[in-house]
Length: 287
Image (cartoon, rainbow, N blue to C red):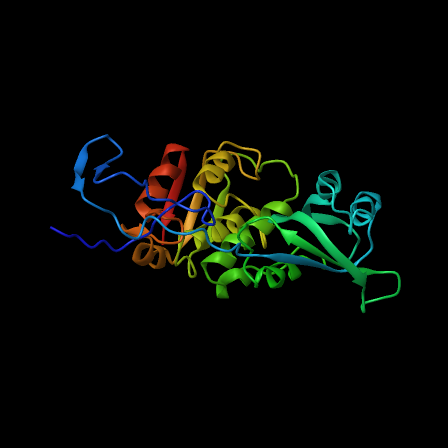
């Protein structure tokens, strides 16, 4: 019997080759509990050639290099192994706000080997630097639009994230984390209002509860583990507290049992969130 499956082939590094063993004539499929699903003569769609890196090159435009980068640039054109090693850089990308302060762009990293540089058209004395990038997934192209909302300072309006897709909502919550102000928790017993009109996915829930607890652009978790950490204190609210979840029918209709193709895992349901909140002594008033 031949069986076709719809789904994903999950690998830790999607650019790595997955080679079929040469002398194998059959395969056994084992579940997480080591129970056998069956024996197959072959498995197609799993073994594949190595893919090209998703980001072959990164360019640093209008760059004013500091000593570590200058040292790496000085090695360009040298062919020794030591020179190649000294041309490697790895740096987190941080946003410079209007007041000159910097904030981390979570997940944004420049990592690779400097290939070349040239004078930049952006300004005198600046360089455009080409970096042969290590294999890594790029951030969505819309992330700079998300970050622009924090450029002038703290946000003053809620639900700015509502028009974004799931990926950008995730990065919105990441930006909220990066810009989180360290303030004391409000007292236990405080009531918070969650605007549920736009909670059409789990990322929307994190954005909404962040603003319910900490105001426009607020952070209160961006995954389940982070939400658990926030519920233990230190992120703006001390438990127990009351959460009034307005327009909860939206989440009830969308946060349902299923498979989350973005996270490649079972979907987080509204009932799961309610149980988690209850475990932390959060009284939820569904409206």
